[in-house]
Length: 250
Image 1 (tube, rainbow, N blue to C red):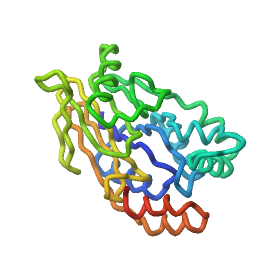
Image 2: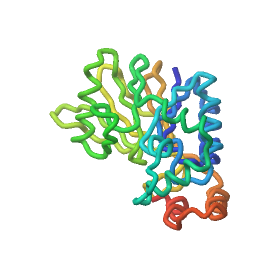
Image 3: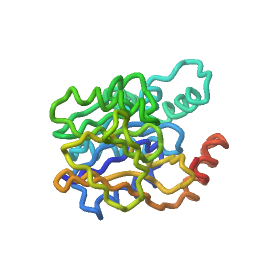
Image 4: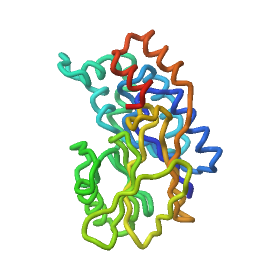
């Protein structure tokens, strides 16, 4: 299986399409969307429509914290995220709200455990951004005998954690396009980056492909027309900080 892993699309349809095209070029035969399909970006309806189409074709689709909030935002938003969720909610119809709310928080498939945030408590939306939290997530997934790979998003950064000779996890910072051996005799945890809003100073869309047959994981960055998405965001009146994040990748 060549599994294409996309997360944190954040209503950026152009970036999503670019990553899907790259995944097809790389021979991916299974797609997983790991949550936060919407939120922040200017085109939630198009992303939801494409995600539903992919799901109908066999893709695995998870729910993230922004999807959860957009499906049922508070009546009186107070934070920036809640205000954005209300705007997103208003761009979608009732059927789309219900579809987002029904999406699962995790999915197990063979050696892979898929989750938006942390495997130890998916509904808490913990950020797996250091070896301690990564260990909590990986240890929880180890209770599932078949699982060797924990694959998630949420942090908008690309990283790979694994158990070395010591007790703490080791962190590997991947190079885009370079396959990393991830043999099944070890346990691995990857955060695959963000399609629609990277935060590492590089505005190129990020995703990854896991080849379970060759036991290799490859992180990718894909250039797309950021300017077109920025222009769309401005037309729709999105906040300046969202536009800046698109332009700067942080």
